[in-house]
Image (tube, rainbow, N blue to C red):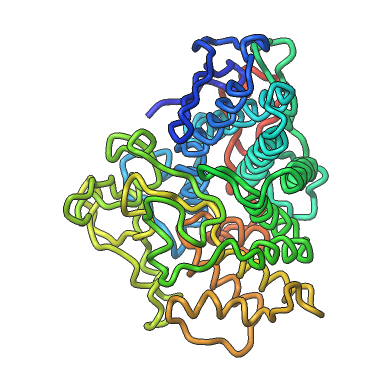
Length: 463
């Protein structure tokens, strides 16, 4: 495993999109000039490169889910592996040279720069495809800005979003790194959220109701936007966006819980998912969410083994009724270093689709948001009906009444090991592993390599 070069030592752009068999006719190099991107196919190939980077371990291929889970490790996940940087996150003892921070930051800003180049070159895109390509680029940028500011900045919920620092908002393309110009300062958390809302709202207006080759569509943007609004405490708009996804009819819960995971392609409830392959999750020799969550011993016959570095803590099982299948969706095995434990079967098979946002989450978001708003519910469905829709699939008992705490626990049951717990606790001002929700130890440091080359970046307190 290696550190990524800091973000503005510009990426070598040479992407091949397997699903579309399109290649960008630009040779790999440190600088990319605008005149090297000449055709609609070139621009679309760049866009496909952004999707490819979403599969990377520095994004939804691992760290956007595993890092939040390690922060919120109590009753969820324990790192038993040999890579100390991950254990440091679980222990809240991170240093500014932690390569995981560099990985997420570097990969995230590569995606943002790709989106910005695509937007800069929209005039080259075929007229029939232009709106969709613009919408996808803004979906990518808004999603990444939201994810990064939640990891590197304090939560929106602490009441100081207008002064707390988030991450830089970069809206223009960088074709060649210029040390005198490419030194963006951090924007406030509020400003980053505002930009994410703007990007995702614009994406919704441009994207089709369905898209090809697992690319983002209108409902992908609505689902992520519902997350943004929920973390802002804007329950009304969170409910509206989630309900739009539910009521679209484009998605349905899988018949059984286990069928929502380890699929060769998107399941019926995947609103947006990334498609992993043997190039992006290759087993014990690489990184990736399956690499770390799948056991080294205990895998089904014929399946490649993982490292087994991320095990389930016993306290997690206390959240489930005996009839709830989700509490049994595990495998007993051991890690690569011989530590016995239990593993989440969500991430047990390699080279499968990895859900980024599922329909079950939309039911829980709409239900909680409607409960908190009160009055006539968005979607004309009572909150208790939404939570019971999710519980029924797994054999959990039917609730007759519901409180916000029920949604907190239900999200943990349904969305455990998908990175949600960290965001839920922080937005509701709940302790995280016994630490105050807005404590500086619950924020990743900005990569030291970025601080060293950009005097305009202010490091988080404590690093």
